[in-house]
Length: 556
Image (spheres, rainbow, N blue to C red):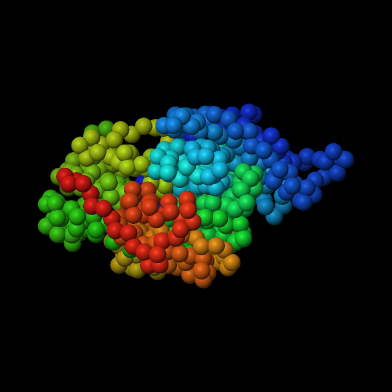
């Protein structure tokens, strides 16, 4: 769950409006100004009844729209199961369901098992916030194929994201974000430019999407998930949330504890942190993960240094040098310090990427920035923080090509809008300066960018709801929390705090002693066996259960 603009872009789909005319629900709720047959305006109760009575018109999925990230239409699964897409109507404001409504984009693959064994639907959120679930689920579906024996696999574009009333902050008057230094350390002009960029971005968001900005927060999205549950015909919500998706799952459990089914939260967000505390924890998490990488690199004769401490110091020095004097690359561009942080932070999301990162840093230290630049750009196009399939891992011998398929995605705009709607914190440059020494102690490489990311909501036109969404869920059934000891973006300690906040007997922890963001999509057999056993058979792992990481294959 990245927070700095550079980190969020480094780590993590359909024809116009998902062919809206053909995919709208069969029984849509009353739209703006619609009237009942007797001439009266629909009441909230009548509107809710209409929303809940929808029957989605499932159709073959088109290609992802540019706002969802672009790409090709999802291919059928190996057993021939086709992906189906639909739209669902929901209240724009759940406090006023008879008011304006909006579309939610859905995708599903039907269960592969016998109807008698089917449990229901398993709803996914892969994180961000801001990632399109409609675009993401097909690419990750092989990881969840075993679960399809008893579930339909379902995901959605949360409100404000992709084809669900996308927030748009783009404006020709705004500078390209690459022109703004995320870590202003070279005089007042850099800081003034960053402050102005955040202020002007907030103003552009209000101009382009002011009508939806107050309604894209996590609590409203959690109510959308309960509507999805009802429309799909499930008595309980069975759920798999990753990274930010764990916060969304916790919010759902708080609002609807009696409707929680089998739920897994992987890469758990710490629900006790305000935005500044979260950023500080992430600085420590990324630093810890990079030190683990550096130790791995040193064991393999890394040219950057003889031990982890020297490798870390050399990388910090390289970032500072590139910040002062960017390195020309073969495509005519430049490799600067922000690009280095993009590449390093992105590669820490999966241990599979470590070999490429090693080659890229060694080359950059030798004045060849091409591999590191390619890595930064490739990881920056993944979007979301749902980890890609391991087969997508960049190859050190052939840095991945960078396409422009992600042009037009609103992921970063949605990230900012949802974050600022959820949080009432509005930090100033003085606030950041006062805390900057703590961030530098936590990580000289990642700390500054994460500290200054706290300015992202300055001047935001919506006041925000609270320091964090509420997740207490007394009376809910067990929720399986998977914490990864090497997780850079959602540090391991967050799982224990989520368990405490959910309430006694609700949060149930499984520890993964591994690397990367999240655990299930790492492919670790122990984690998958434990999670599958719970989702498929309702069997929780033993208290205090620990799964150990499998080493990278020889030669990597």
